[in-house]
Image (cartoon, rainbow over all chains, first blue to last red; front, side):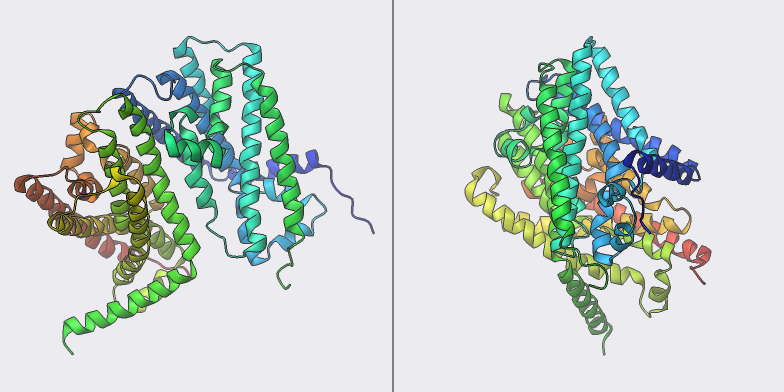
Length: 266
Length: 270
């Protein structure tokens, strides 16, 4: 008997459908999610307002430009909370407990399945509210993005999501080598805070950390700059290359790591 | 055996136990410390950049550096995760065997806190010493009296944050969103407890609100004592009185929530 390997669009569609059915049982979570997002956006805006009481520019960016970036940060957070944390974020635990066996037995691509098996769909509100915030800030800037700027933004945002995904794969893959790494996601949370502000806002040693050592700040700075026209839409090409490289690295790392997996009884 | 000796023996055993459990999770503790350090480091970075153009309401670059380093240390020494633990204990029924012990679960939680803070606080102090050796801006003047006052303020603040966290965790008797309430509190505390900026830089009505409520006593006050922002015996006395007052209020709230909550508690499988 041969097991037919399913095509990835079909797998993805059924995973989304399954998760939607599951999440619709918990509608109160939707309200809670929207309220939480509204609260965190308000608190981030208050933080910015506090900084801008004492300055007129942050790393050369004015208030509404930073708000555009904040919207992008929030949208990227939505991608992380809706897809990455519930999916790939559970990988370390699965490796430790041996639950990964159940995934590997399925006739589907294991990386695809692990990445999308569990979706926290209500957190998509973060993406929507974040982009709405960016839109409002663009309106306040009086800037209407051109088609090319919008396209560059979409590409850069997708590339940022891929880079963040690759970081999660890298962190979670550590579990294949050092079994007990259950809190490793905290490392990501700590570094991700750096993406709240434009790279140019960080002085001295911090700039070295967030721009070169752990270049997370680019993940929001590049899409926001493309949207406001701070950089040429050609940045989209560079972003696409970085995103593709990140995806290939994640794929390669997954394959290498999986070879180390010995299963629950191994 | 005297009562003091009995308690010392109990706490000795509890702390030893908590220390050994933590020992298995050394890497996790390092990660949590890192997480606690990045946020003030980023706030410091932004204020450092802003203060490059001149003092911000009397705060020069070096003042920000000292403030946020003191914040990292005091935050680590006063932080309490009990809300998350209690939420789990109550919802999963792990509270049951703790209730069967001849010792209130708050003592186990207190011992956990002492063991955790001894470890994470030491890490921060070491990091601070190393940084201070290279970077004069974060050095504190040698002043044992001030350090002694800071120790008292930190002890009060740790007690206060423990009671707030414990009480919020007890809300799990009534709701499944106890940890969400704690996160909401943490979000508000970002501003009102001085984690984003020294309270002196907030708009005056908000800074006033922070000192009327428990937010300044729970974090900003000990930080200000350590950096020397609070001077004069009346200001110091006022701060300590506010700490004692809110400690008493939260202690009352905690007792009340515990008594009422236990009456409602129908454990899993119980």
